[in-house]
Length: 461
Image 1 (cartoon, rainbow, N blue to C red):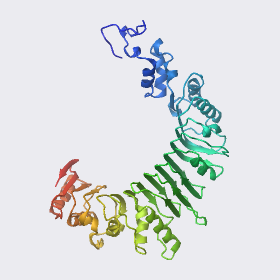
Image 2: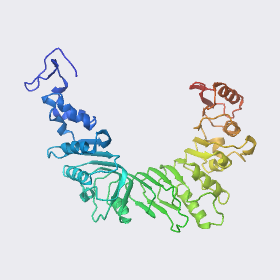
Image 3: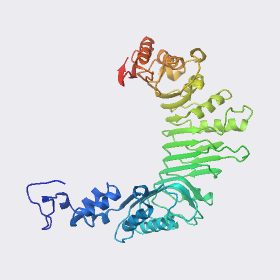
Image 4: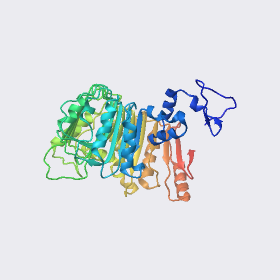
């Protein structure tokens, strides 16, 4: 609290704590409510003990954010939420509840959300860490809430949803959310006419085809990870996306065979981690699989910024031995996570990005010897366009790493900055790597080599 010498009054009232003036209490209720909005809900309620002035202020804060793990037992959690939710005069615009318990009270959660919906609820987030497939946890009318702007749900199951209308919803994140009818997910997306941010995360999936069609979505995160491989499964798992306004796409899927992406805009940024269900080696006689891979690469070839993972590049490496890689003419930034054993494809990968200016490499360790890595040629972008290269992983001075750095420095005529992080087992070992870097010839006189290491000191060579 702030203390002042002069006595301040508000409507003839003075506020003091421990005999000293309480300046904050002189602020109007509206401003105090905005201050309390930034505090955890438990602390908001505790302010009622400060003075008479604060006794009822917590009821005007339209936000409830609670984790049942912060309470001594589940009954205490339920009683606390009831105290906050059920006074009809309490506004609830933002409701977030988190539970890590095995058993929960479904009737309580349903009644809380139902009460919040009647008070112009705008943000709803419910995080469960154990999937609850029994009683419906949410009232059906949450899916016809006319005021809802943001919906985040984790570990839930829904029966039939016959009517869905969310005219103001802009953000929807669904993690491990199941629907009795597989078509409900698609209907839910279509029923959000202004949706901008969509995230779907599923594991051990039962949905064969995921379709996302929206004119308004500009950010999409789709994750489908399944560690259980069913070799008897003859069905095709598929992803179909039609989002012409998309600016960011994160696609991480180790189960789907096919990815069809329509109308991906040129400025879009993509983060790709898919393997087309190729477990090991791509069968050269599987013409259908080759066609799907080529079609996918062609559909994302207009993007400007791409992050691509190890398994995806491994499949592309095998594909490149059978078919040419499409050209990514708009690509200016590439973040590639690549196995050292697949480094020989690097010239072909860079050659497919003729206007690339920035490259980030995450190199997975390899046991290959220096002489086993061969770079067959120098691609156009490396010679004429590439300005920045960053080696993301700390280098330990093994042959593969040093040969790659030498390849970049000796063949990048436009390079301005190469960033390297040393990862030697000792300062002496890092110093040896440092001296070896000093001896490397540079094609670009403007190139600065930034070395992080030797007691976390950033050096320019």
